View 1: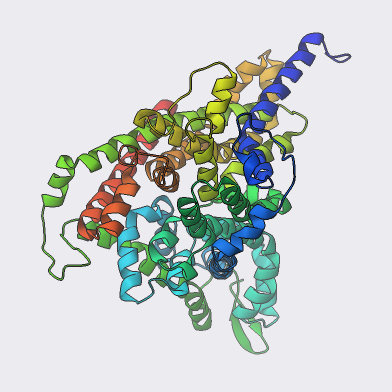
View 2 (view 1 turned 180 degrees about the horizontal axis):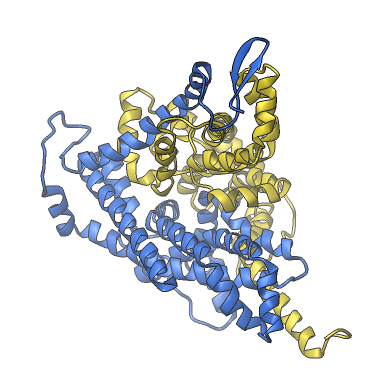
Length: 279
Length: 310
């Protein structure tokens, strides 16, 4: 077995890489195509024989976006919605995860079941009553309305609980014996030791809320409350043949996610494999 | 050691010991806000949607009547709903097997100690992490009619006849399912790959020592041990395919498509009845069906996997 690999084995390896390379290229090919298209002049975009690279690189597709629609506002709205949601979820998941992991009290298992069982019910199922609740609260077309269904996350609590269970009880008890209050224990032992799972959950949730479409679609009904996805959808509907502008707007919508993904690749993969990126 | 005395005060320590009053106050103040939010945002709406499905509630009409069966009877005679039901069923029947089989294939190949594994992993995963709206818009352009779209251009180049991606309903639905599969596939590759990595290498080595080939190891060691992970994948794939919305919504609106009614699915029906016509009662009845059917599908899948492994 040891020695020079046989020709057969080399060919098997080459075939494997060919298969993996080709299929993974097909997965990202649409993005490559759109990336280059967004830098083309409008007369180059739809042609008899499409060219991958622009003959002349131009930023005109990007520069015209703020003039035709308030894309800066959309972008900021998306940042506000996903930011507030992520902050609440980081805090809530850590607090609940800690209590579910380290305390025994009456009703704990029931409450934990209540939290976890909602993972399998997608938002689409109960979106009608959720909308009516938002309407009764007077929160249609407001930040409160956009954000409030997004501030809880079952899988976040589950993920933090699993991680905090790994923190030794002795550490907590030692602090208590030293006279630390429960709050002190949480703030100076549990939180610092859970930063890595909290980061994983936060990034995953940020990506999820940045991408969410159906809830903003029904709750935001004036232009100034649109998120990026919503603004993009209306823009492509109104300017259906302006492929250059649409593809530039697509790039701007997916670029933040792409940057965050490439920066925190392993965290995201770990978090998503656990949570499925669902609330 | 359940109680320690510190500076003359009794302090409860140790997980599982009796909690002091201040500890109980602390833990409830930690969980209560989140639990209340779960009840307001999830539990009550789920119960309300079940109740509302038996009413004719409409946001524009003050009078609400109780309808014991009329909404559900109406569903059967509603051609829009029937189309949506059939389409969503096709969505599940096509998307779930393709996602699971391709996901398994890629994960198994990636697990064979290939060089650049993390590069391939990243590329497969990319569509999953990207928002659906821009992704669907990009695909809508690829599918565009005539020479506008890349898909038909490539068919032209290969000497094949063009396809009416967005004008033949049967093909349009499959094209949308294609977007869904392309988008979700990366999740399954990752989940199965993580599952494979959690199988102890000694199991495989033992099989190799006994003379098993690579494929025999995969079939007789990896796949049986991966079964719980595959079940998880099947359940998630089913729920996502059954409640798909954004890709269908994006594809079925705009100028270059006439098939919006033919490719509608369950959730686009809920959206249309509830938020375009404000028939909240009827929309809730569709939600009810969405919910019950997905519960039944999940129950059947758990059943099948248990029987198989018994």
